[in-house]
Image (cartoon, rainbow, N blue to C red; front, side, top):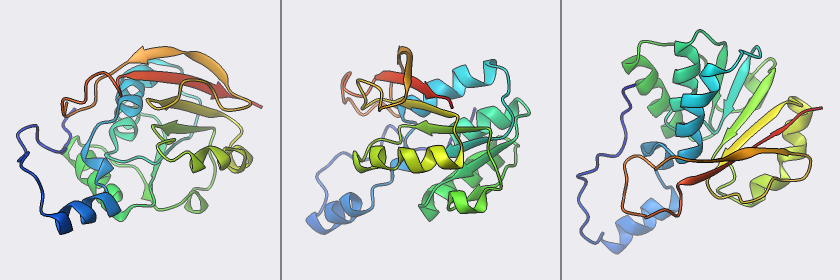
Length: 182
């Protein structure tokens, strides 16, 4: 799969303070293949297709692309317009098309809602109940989680290194996978 991500040879010199603040204010998380999405992009397409899948917080689009390449009905959702643009470019580079929208309100229905590395903000855990109202079948894969949120059943731990590897060590390589069903 071809993904337009941050190149591993990017300049590593210290940033001007104003540039550093701008990056921290609006981090380009879509410029990475985070472990949860990367691992799910290899594992989930090998499972039986559950129907319409929503990739919430799609970032670079890796999971949506992998599912669409297997013929799945997938919607990519991200509130960040730059992430939606990155997903569209990556989908085009891989010869697939799928709807890419800004919010769940634009998705008519879902049989599975996937949250790959969605819990980067602990406040997102509080929104899980609302997400379960939209779609009661949730699949979570996150490199920051060590135990499942309430109502989730653990499916195991796996490893996947962030791409590009920025020498962050093993901090973000362990992925906790869990599901929630009605």
